[in-house]
Image (cartoon, rainbow, N blue to C red; front, side, top):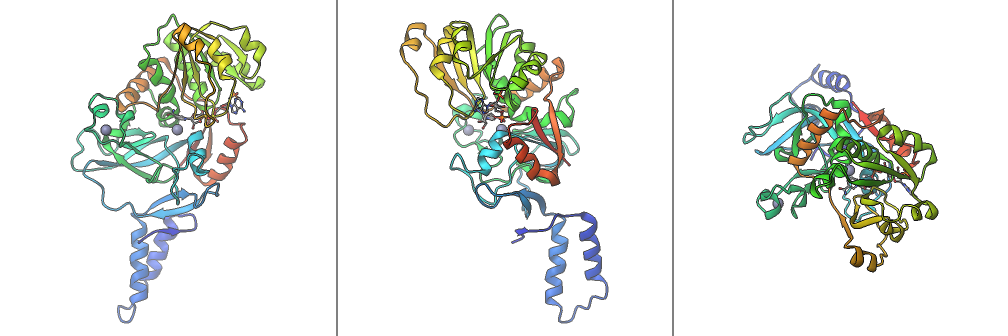
Length: 378
Ligand SMILES: NC(=O)c1ccc[n+]([C@@H]2O[C@H](COP(=O)([O-])OP(=O)(O)OC[C@H]3O[C@@H](n4cnc5c(N)ncnc54)[C@H](OP(=O)(O)O)[C@@H]3O)[C@@H](O)[C@H]2O)c1
Ligand SMILES: [Zn+2]
Ligand SMILES: [Zn+2]
């Protein structure tokens, strides 16, 4: 009922409108005013968000009524929200799963403002984060094995659900993870999608400190991957197409850098890597990358490359090499990643924009000039 495209909201303005409506109010023959009054009062519980209304559209202020809080849900007062490349892909409906109006934002850091009556492990006032998933079925085999991120019925924060480009966002309590001591809200958001996505493979594939690992694409995900891998003890190579990022990649934890699009440079690294993590969403020469793996090495995709892979099978057969992919990480691994980040003082390098400048922020991401994660700030 209360779904409106509106002018940007300010509490003061709404309050004075409400007082204005009450002043000189006569209850006789005033049904329009009563409706208007209820609308104004209703605004206090409306979520004030930014939404796109069509593929590739601009973000515009948007209000929605979140309804009654579910028994297993929490509501988060959003303080910061990172912008992941997946938000851009969803805005543009590149994956064919977007519903409009679409409120992006799945790298939320904020404070719990309400908890459902069944929620006992989170408290009002607690600092928390929310990533790609806003809920899981909780009873399938992956959920019961702790692999919630592999749940076939997992609910995404921004698919058929309104995300974190808003003053508040709701999610099932299982998907909301408390921030440990040592993680500031200003740095936390990007860890909840970009961070966990590159940390999770280290856990899944039992990566050793003696391993040599390459990261392709030094953007939001890639720059956090370099930091995690360095702290994990690995020998780290940054594959980047941007010469301007080479020195910075070394400061983030890479031990050397290679041009990700240079066939000669790739040819010099044949048989070197135990793991290569691709964070790009474009097509590269994947056969050349396959040749840079050691026997039993793995080329792992977390970047959502849409073009099908055209890979030679023989290097995989002869060297028992693997190709794989994975989505974000489970709540337990998010908590583990946050502890690791706090202990090793790992944090994203962020550029902050106020929420009101969300369209400028999106343009900056599109331009490829973001260094390295854009975060919206309340
Ligand atoms: N699997 C998951 O669960 C998961 C989670 C989050 C995000 N994602 C996906 O991961 C991908 C990366 O997300 P992000 O937020 O890190 O994006 P991003 O900040 O835009 O970074 C992507 C990086 O890819 C490289 N790149 C871009 N265009 C290129 C080109 N034409 N040739 C070579 N390299 C190119 C760039 O790095 P250089 O400048 O260093 O070359 C760029 O910084 C997206 O597809 C996103 O949807 C997946
Ligand atoms: Zn499940
Ligand atoms: Zn993401």
